[in-house]
Length: 462
Ligand code: EPZ
Image (cartoon, rainbow, N blue to C red; front, side, top):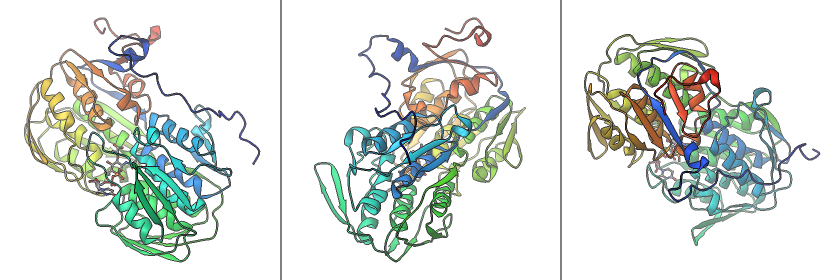
């Protein structure tokens, strides 16, 4: 394929580093100002799923033909993965603003099978290139991701699986070096259910010689979406979405076009915001089947849920009831919705016990909610939330993607004004969240943002 027209050869620059405490336009744009008290009423269109787009982009490594992905969300993690693929020699044209956000990737001339620490440290999901690189190029050098705010995030299961497919692995100086003349089929039984581990090894096995059986796989919709793309590329995969996946390796994969599934966590975040503000909110372009555990839990709390084919309508005109939650792998209650649910639990009548089973440090949002007036006690993996406690606006700090979403939700019902700092965390996984929320009545803006006249916020918002 001729070079993709308009290809931007240089990596997309990250937002400038935060100045040391000096208020610069960039710093200001890294803060949200939210005035609570408005009901959310209207429709929000859900973007494509970040956690489906990231493995799909990595899958393009598996072929020398163009892969066209539609409905790619315009979020920071996608830019990071684009820069990673470009650093390897891939051609990536992000199609934002074009019809269907059509993104074209072509990995014909990969020259550098390396994922450098500078990129991997900002996004753990960069390890998704490990399996595809070994499968396509016979070798990979990928930085170990290191920890993150929510936990240690090891990738030992990715490595163990690659070894079971015949790769030789060396770990030194913070990097994994993996090599294989050609991977061979094997039998992998995951010690723990891992989403990107299942995705990484499914991609590796797609080009291996012989059959691979993987057991105790993740069943998330994003795994099934990746399998759907790989099958369009010519892979022979059965069972994705179930606990056992069977992959018969093929010699070569070809290009394909695929539409990324809607983002169930973005949808769930807005569903909770709508319920908490006593609003009447409809999420369009979402898949209610991906939200089952959350919607059942919200009905238990007293929220009225109306699910359509590709929409969900939330109405809640009365007090919410407390309900316990335990995070589990799909189809259980998603860990990525735990922080947002905690914000809701602060407003429910009664005590909710939230148990986080997936990550060991995913309660960073609790203390910030307490600073806003919530009554939350942490006991190991459990958070005991006593509602209903009025929340008051405060200056709060974002620590990770979903904790940040929790604080936005809390601020939407807090008395007065909340200023959220370090909202670059939110920009990693939510496409223009402030515009979407403003469109249904929220009083939210970036501190450095100059709002067009028509969208000017009511007096009193800084
Ligand atoms: C994916 O992360 C998601 N990210 C996460 O979403 C999500 O929270 C997580 O799955 C769980 O659903 C992407 O898909 C890009 P895991 P992943 O491997 O794959 C342990 C968000 O907010 N584990 O399923 O990295 C691990 O420590 C992000 O969008 C090992 O021990 O998560 C954890 O306790 C945050 N060894 C558990 O398994 C391994 O080799 C589940 O992790 C791999 C994982």
